[in-house]
Image (cartoon, rainbow, N blue to C red):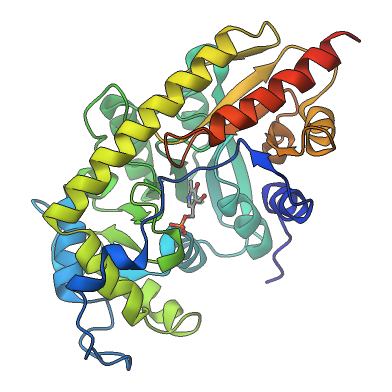
Length: 377
Ligand SMILES: Cc1ncc(COP(=O)(O)O)c(C=O)c1O
């Protein structure tokens, strides 16, 4: 299997290479420091793998069930600790989808399943989200796409890049269609927990025996560097198959990541972190929303969850051109063009991090660049 670099990754590589002074791409909550956890860690902890469990520390898996609201339906044996959501997605997709199988992926969405599906030699079908319907999925289109060869439906919920959420009845319909042909439904739920106006979204692992919920401590807790994520599925064979493939990739979970995540998911730490993440996220979202409302060239469906959104560009230039101008002097600002998702007239804007002036700085620079470009429209 040869995996091509997807556009999003290429643009991240190129963007950071230019050493920008500001950016509007940050997509995770402010990251804690090691000192925030140090008192709760055991200095005598062995850095050899504990060998306690190939699925991950049982107490950590219990906390994952609790934090994802899956404890009532799923058990410890239904959780596999992985190197982030990315590895969880990789393991499930690689084990479930074989050459010539069909894979359905929501678009715009997380590019990982698209490139992996193509590398495997599967038939990848795209399920388009429609901006005129608040970026929701067209269930009629899904019904047309599904066939007896459909092995997996991959949905990013909350969606990267639009920040929109599928409602329970929509998930139920997706599951009903999947169940008719025995397909799995994988929901990348990495942004769950940062819903802005609604209760926490329902988890597919609770809703369907072939539902797979993936997630991590990367976004909501800002602990991306720990590489600590999970998959949750009631199908024990799927969890076992994922563990088998993990043996041939990262082999086992990392002990430091597990130890720190085990503290980070504890009540006092978790409650404080989520409060901070929500305050900063709401503050930054309001700032960005106000900015967009004041610019005639920009328009978006305000994100309902997560720390990124997709903004339409009403200009004669596309978002790649704007991004190219913006990264140059005097602006030196990195934005992600929607071209990275195959949507050239959109910008993917990130509003993660602290509620400090970093986002304001990026927006000031974007404002100057838009003012200049607008003169030539
Ligand atoms: C939708 C989505 N899934 C997965 C990932 C990877 O996250 P993790 O750090 O948990 O592997 C990201 C990171 O940007 C993401 O946005």
